[in-house]
Structures are given as C-alpha cells and as structure tokens.
Image 1 (cartoon, one colour):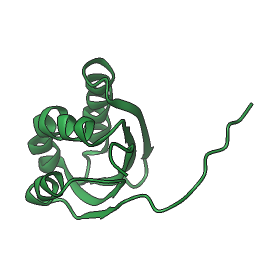
Image 2 (cartoon, rainbow, N blue to C red):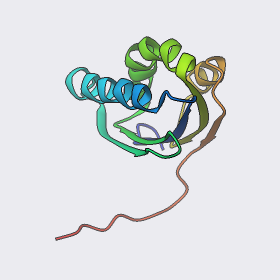
Image 3 (cartoon, rainbow, N blue to C red):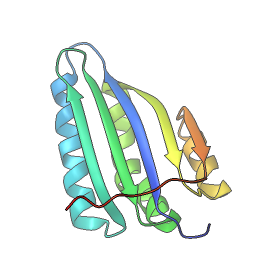
Image 4 (spheres, one colour):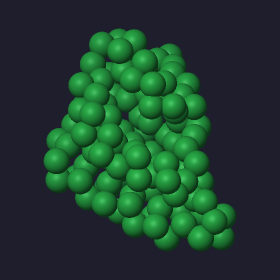
Length: 125
C-alpha cells in the first residue's frame, strides 16, 4: 500500500551515567520534530530512570516524511547519541522504500522492516 503511515519503534540504552543526557537530547529531538516536521504525526518517548533505557514510538505520515526525518533531525543528533548510548533495535512498521531501508542500515541501525499486513483502529469516545 503506497503512502501508508509508517510507525518506527526503537530503543536506546544510555551508557553509564548518561541517562539524563540521553533524555535531554530526545527532548530536543521531540521539539524539533514538532516544530519542523509536519509529516511527523506523533512522537512518544518512554524513559526508565533506573536502567537508562529510552523507548520511542514515532508515527510518520508516509515514506517521504520518514525520509525527511532521517535526513534532518535524526542525522543531526545521531553522532551525539552514539557517544552516549547504544542504539537498537529499530522496528520500521509500514511500507519503507528500499532506498530508505539502505539508509537506515547504512547508519548502523539494527533495523527490521515489515509492511502493514492487517489490523484495526478503535476510536475511544
């Protein structure tokens, strides 16, 4: 299905004593995505203070929005993140073009890709 939403769920594990720094960087990432990426529909970050694990759920409008994110916000923060945390795994849920798959793999991500097969959405009233 072309132009479907893409969900990316991933994990960062902070190096010793770097948990607060990891969280602070992701507060910047979230702010930049909100302000500069209209195709980023949702960002949820979950942080475990005791383990330094950050779990992130990003929802993108389509593959163009994901590509924009990887080339801007993600690329801008990735080197700094690698200094303080271990990445992965990264789960790309949706139709991700081969070029973007190769870009993610080229960044050294432990990436898994799967197009949507089925599911449902329930509205909470």
